[in-house]
Image 1 (tube, rainbow, N blue to C red):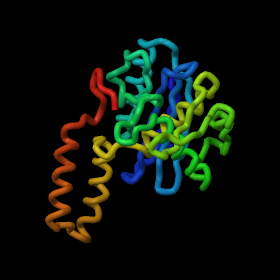
Image 2: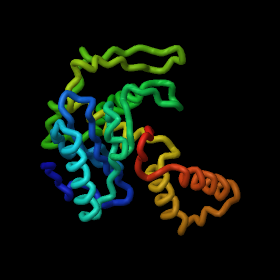
Image 3: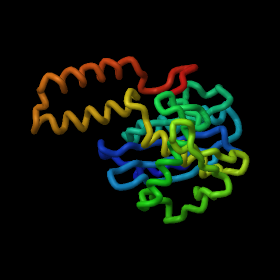
Image 4: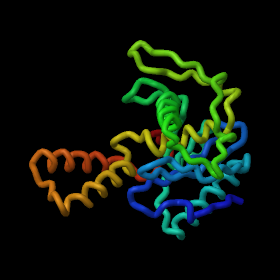
Length: 227
């Protein structure tokens, strides 16, 4: 049974609530977190059953409970089996980000290091032992474009570390055309529009274009889709 502390998820529209699920770990795991203006809050790490039918049941119950609790939460799934393609946005940390030319894990690790340098990640009870990244499993180098690339020893990385990186990517490194990203961006813009009215031609044109692009992207992944 998945234990959920809904009170820890933020109801503020400026907060991004994320659930990350990975089957690429030694044991299927789920991590919940909330991104506020000041920090990324890691809420709970949970082991999941090593069974696709039971995983589907757990995810379905999770969605139902979140909906009843009125929590706005996005689910990201790392699923090398391809059997959970309809269970949230599909991400693979070892896949290459089209706009960046680096693996997703490099982008997530870059953000993790930046957050860590300013104590920008809050762990449950202040204990980061399940998520700590050892230097021995990371090799840092520059690619041909001069960007930092992180080579990861996946066989020796902790499950908590991998799922945390997936959570970081989902919460903080989303592409600008992702539906949830745009919805929150437009909500913030609309909140400020009452004061500024933001009616100049350039803004109206660009927002219109972006909203058109947003409409082409689903709010949840469809079968066979990878983001």
